[in-house]
Length: 178
Image (cartoon, rainbow, N blue to C red):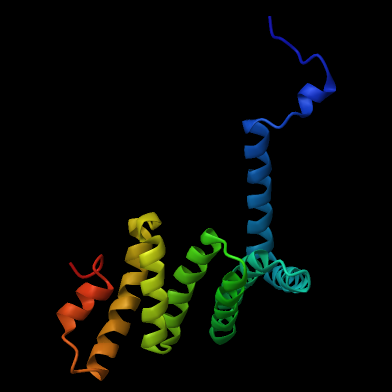
């Protein structure tokens, strides 16, 4: 015979199922806002970013700025997206949040690579990403960013021909150039 909760309080106790359900609802909501209503998502993220900055909530400002950058990049506004990602890294210097930093650096490497921005900045962002979070990155993440890093490294080494390419690659990106 099934046992029923003795009180309403027992029903409202958050369990794994309830938490997973809430996460599912939030994920689906974000998906629909992001893909079906990008202009509204941009407006909401801009408001959230402003509120976080006004309240000195820099880790959440970084998260909002990084999420906003992703939407902006999908609207082919890459220079603005790159600025937002750079700003996110600045906010994270004021209040760290490792998960947001990892996502921001991963996204910034791709954005800089697509925009063909300065190879030095891409190298710096990628090197910090791999040094801090390389052990957490899935092989698929590495596959996505490796071509951008490789192109930037080759550009940098061409411009600095006095550097030994193999030694430099091994010192700065041992995981990529073994």
